[in-house]
Length: 200
Image 1 (cartoon, one colour):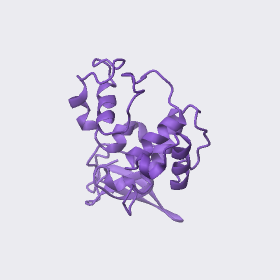
Image 2 (cartoon, helix red, strand yellow; image 1 turned 45 degrees about the horizontal axis):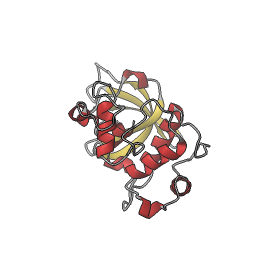
Image 3 (cartoon, helix red, strand yellow; image 1 turned 45 degrees about the vertical axis):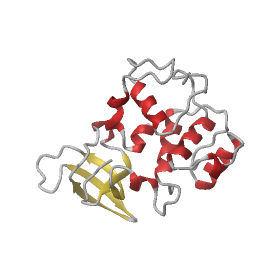
Image 4 (cartoon, helix red, strand yellow; image 1 turned 60 degrees about the vertical axis):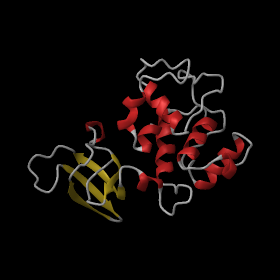
């Protein structure tokens, strides 16, 4: 999820056949993701050569990765881990709609909410939300995805019901990056590039 948030999933295969951690086999499906996240400075493992791929992730660990994703370091946050990281994330609003303590296990649902909040948070030294750095995102719209394979429209192959304050409009979009079928019927945020194409 972190690598996808970086917009770097296309680089994963380049990192598949490395063994940076003794408990992450190069043949594991997640090896490229772990190795890339390590190279990007998001994760560091336990410091004993192990990563712990089967371990549950705590809120303190996850928040640390999210803050690194936004470009923050210990110098910005403070040296007391995980307390300073959790306080810093709270100040940024990353924990909105999530009630976890440092040692609580992060579920996939929690991770999705926290990543969404992070996308909407300003990166270090930036005046705009982090999502602007992902896949050339220039704007977002709140919408319900109705169809991602429209064949009869001449104005785009993705149909969404866009929510504008008190009204809604049916809008067609071209897709630079194909939206998965599993998101059809879902309410969320469409990310658009400068040409108005859907990128995520």
